[in-house]
Image 1 (cartoon, rainbow, N blue to C red):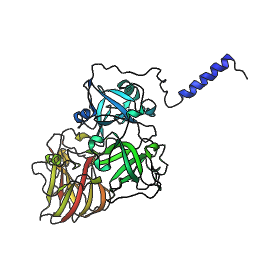
Image 2: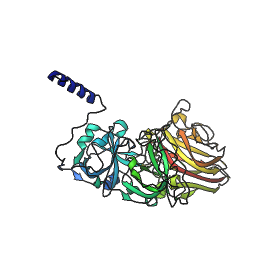
Image 3: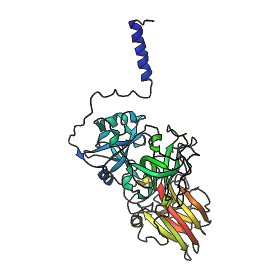
Image 4: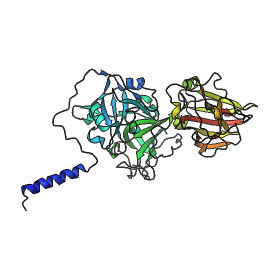
Amino acid sequence: MKLNKLSIISFATLLGLGFASCERVYDAPLLTEPKVTVGEEGIITIAQYKEKYKSVPRDGQLIEEDFAIRAVVVGNDISGNIYKQIYVQDATGGISIGIDQNNIANDYQVGQEVFIKLQGLAATSYGGVVQIGMMKTSSNRIPYEVAKAHILKDKWPNVENAQPKKVKISQFTDEMIGTLIELENVYFELGGTAPFGDQEYNAVNRNLKDTSGNTLYVRNSKYATFANDIMPKGNGTVVGILSKFNNDYQLFIRSAEDCYGFSGKDPVTGGGPTPDPVVPDPQPDPTAGALLFAGSDFNNWDTFLKSLNQYGLTFGKESASGGIGGSGALHLSGTTDSKNGYLFTAVVTEGIDMTKVKKITFYVKGTAAKSLSINVYNTNTNITYDDNGVAKPAGYINYNVGDVNGAKVITGTTKNDYKGTINASSWTKITLDLTVAIDGQLVTLPTKVGDNLIAFKYGSSSAYDLYIDNINFE
């Protein structure tokens, strides 16, 4: 059958409408090799960027200087396991760039060299890791049209530009965060029996182990194209982007092809303990999990001690590897004296916006014959009390932990109480909910750097063998 001219035009129109109904209209392929012409921008490395913006406010920090970064795309959303972001790296390190768009891989392929104009974007942070984003946008991501104007493609993409670095789990450092790595002779703990993802949760952690017993979390989204694939059995090689959430290193696989060479037999295993699993969470709030004060993850002991008031730490000691995932922690060990006492009092530190704090969280593991009581300092004079329940001009609200045998949420009260025992065989989350009013009023935290912020107190004449880690806010 022949189509007349009008029919051809009508068919073309309908075809065009069909494409227009898709999520977005893709840019036409470039006919000439893209080339970036450098202007007045000062070139900095990713390591220099991370150092410059190592402490950023919760809402991000506007980049006012005319800086730029030259880097190569090493990770994108090709499989859906990496969500609305790309990872780029140079010779000094790697970093995530949040972009408010799906199917970014069509425009920023692995191996694409890019020139990132930073002025007008923002330094952001998620889970304690510095990123590149934009302020006052969806989850601090950069709108797509803005991203295209700031992340310029240079030359044709070449996958050979994105070669992973071969490392071992025991060799991880924070300088590797955001980079493409390769792990050889590793195995999935549930290989051959469980899928990468879990359709009950938006994302889950799967344990990847080496023959020395070291363990790494592999973070998998239920939206990944390989989410329902059974993880390979035996020993093999895994490639991915190394990241970190608070104290835990994580690996993001870019596609199913990042796992290869697995034997299909029972794995060659090693000794060493398996860390307590992280509870899966549905698309965590990017603003959650920030440190409440400098050093409150106990990974830098000197920083923690410098964040305390003049009385310092009166009971307890550093545990360099007793925390979550083998990180640092505070260890309470021994029997307390005959009076209830202050373990420590932390002050407001620079770069943390107290007005954003709605909940304070921390984790405990171990035992205590008497529980903990916590003072959250308050500048709202309508609801401040002393230990006898008598109102006073300024002070704190008490949060009594009580019995602990599972995760719990605590609301404020007017008097310290050490009743109850702690018996937590695995890391257990404690949440202090500051959004619940007391006498019709809400807690107002101090905002001046150096003012008392939070105090942990212990009970008298009691045996403690308790670890505390990750004092954060949400």
